[in-house]
Length: 121
Image (cartoon, rainbow, N blue to C red; front, side, top):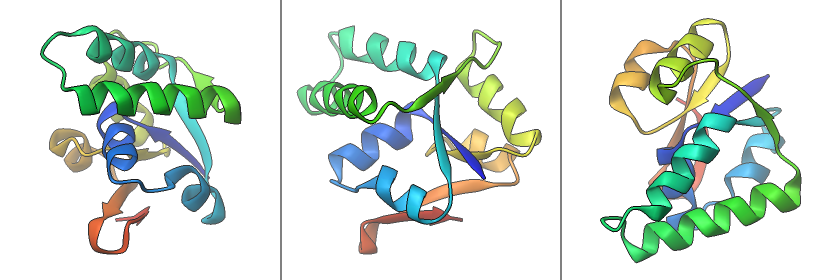
C-alpha cells in the first residue's frame, strides 16, 4: 500500500510530535511525498505570513525526508489538491487535513490527536 502525504498533514504531525513515518510504515504503508508538496512546503516557509512554528516544522520535515530518503513522485498537475484527488481516485491512500480532499478520495489517513497516532480513517 502506498500513501501520499499532503503539506497540511506533514506540518500538523511535526507540530504535534507524531512519528508519522514510523507509524505508517508499521501499518504496511510505503510513504511517498509528491514533488509538488515539497515545493508547496518551501513556498509556505518563504511566506512572511507563515508562523515561526510552521517554518520550523517544515525545516524539520525536509530534514527528515532527506535523511530517510523518502520516495518522491510528480503529480502531473500544478494544483497539489487536484493531483492528490486524482491519485486518490487511482487507489492511493492520501494523508491530508484538507476537507475537500478527504471528501473526494475513498482511502485516507487521519490523525488521532488523543493517541498521537495516524491511521486509516
